[in-house]
Length: 398
Image 1: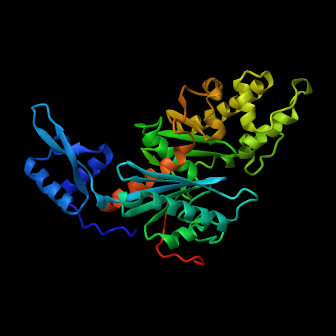
Image 2: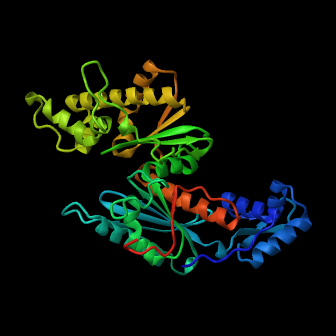
Image 3: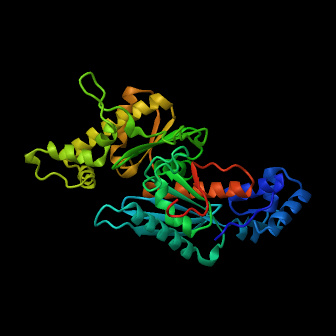
């Protein structure tokens, strides 16, 4: 699974390879036209890339003048990548080619009898990666990189400070299993990256991704790139002072607790009138009841949507993003969208607010895209963009 060495490519070859990776299979005449490259140059480029196994013909296409042209795609030596989402109850792993072509998807449950230890989660992450490699089988042989999304702050400045409890600790077993770069990224950042390339934020230069579920988080995209901050903690929305008033003292992570689905359910149960019968047992049940028109459930969902709208208005005031994408187990529920829009519009300037189109798969989609971008940059001899890349041959006690 060790990545193969790639020699330095000419500028024209890098342009062609990048274009094929982003556009998918394409004919040589079309490539030459897009990149304004002459026929001799295209011949030299395709010979170079073909010899290296970075492009390969996959068929032909009939042209408008009746001539057929060879269609080229990424070759076997570009390899593949894996994106991994480390959730609370399961680990998802997706393998794909550098052009986004799907290869495999697996899911491994995390033991739920009790709170899983770091070592247990690390074992599941390793199992998921191995299962993805096994599922890919002979369709691709070179594993270029793995990107792992974790629900923690990921920072170059803090890497290794807490070797047994830090987010990189869950990758100790995986680091011993694979000889490829392992990228570590915050899960909300990955979800935002997924929306940028595959979701409702495609083509947007600036936008925010707000995740609302058991916890809350903000993914910030500026200039088409993730904004991570000095400590990698940009977007830790739960750290905003809350409550903030003359007679209330803010509590640490008070905002995150207030907006979390557990706290929402606690407030709902505490104030649920006896005349309305038994309160919902879970946040999912609350939203299901509201969707069916149950009055008390609708009231609580509208209250929560209004609170979210106020929070969104604050973020709009900070960033002027042009677009806010709502995700997470609670945030992506479309039943709240209009109330969030209404309240936000009352408090600040009109801004597009949309629900994620990627759903629960957004994080692993973003992680896989991060891994693919990193791998392509390495092949092209460019500087990859990544928060943390774990060093090779790390031991369990490192």
